[in-house]
Amino acid sequence: MAKVEVKSINALATENKSEKLDKASEVVKTDKPLYAKEVFLTIDDGPSTYNTLRNLKTLKDNGVKATFFVVGKQAEELPQVIKEIYNSGMSIENHSYSHNYNSYKSEEACFNDFDRCDNVLLKLLNKKKSKFVRFPGGSDNQVSNKEVMSKIRKNIIGKGLNYVDWNVSAGDAQPIKLGPKELFKNIVDQCENKNFAVVLIHDAQDKKNTADALDKIIKYLKSKGFIFRTFDDITPTEIKEMIRLKILNR
Image (cartoon, rainbow, N blue to C red; front, side):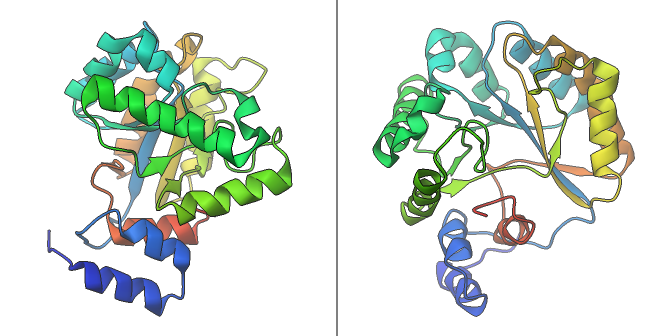
C-alpha cells in the first residue's frame, strides 16, 4: 500500500472543493484504488451478552472483519464483551453513550453523549477518540428537531469528526420483527446492483434473528465478490466514495 503525504490528501480535497472530504481525509495517511466490490459491514447498538459473542464467532469462522458502532453504556455494563470485540481485531466506533434521542435536544447534549462514549472506550480499551461516529437513528432521523440536527451535523464535521450512515440495511430495527430469511433477503435485494456497500445490522439483546442470518449474509456477500473493509484502515479514496454516495457526512 503506497503512502500518501498529508499535503497530497489536502490537495485532493482542494481539487474537489469539498470541506467534507478535507476533514474526513485527515483521518488517514494511506491510499489505494477501490476494490471492484467493497462492503463495510457495520453492527450497531451492542455489546450485548448473547448476540455479540455469536456474531464474533460467525465473523471469525468466515475470516472477515466488521465495524462495531457501540453504545458506551452497554460497553460499561459488559466490559468483557467489549474487550472481546477489541481482541478479535474488529473496528470499534462511537454510537453515543446513551442511545437516547433526548441527546438531540441541543448540540451540547449530543456532543456530550458522544464524548462520554469515547471516555468509556478510553478507560476500557485505551482507545483514542473515535474519528467516525454514527447517530442513533442515523443523521436524518425523524425524532430530532431538523434545525438542531442540521447544526449538529455541521459542527460534527467542524470538530474533525465524520458521521456515517449506510446504503444497505437488513431492516432489523423496524417495529415489525423480521425473521432471518427476510433479513437476508433485504440484504440481497439492496446489494444486487451495488459495488460499494455500507451494510447496517444490529446486535442488541433482542436481535437473535440477525445473528441467525449473519453467516448466510456473509457467505452471500463473499460469493458476489465483495471484499470486507473496516473503518480502522479506511482510505481517502473510500472516504471520497462514501461522500459521493451520501453515506458519509452527507
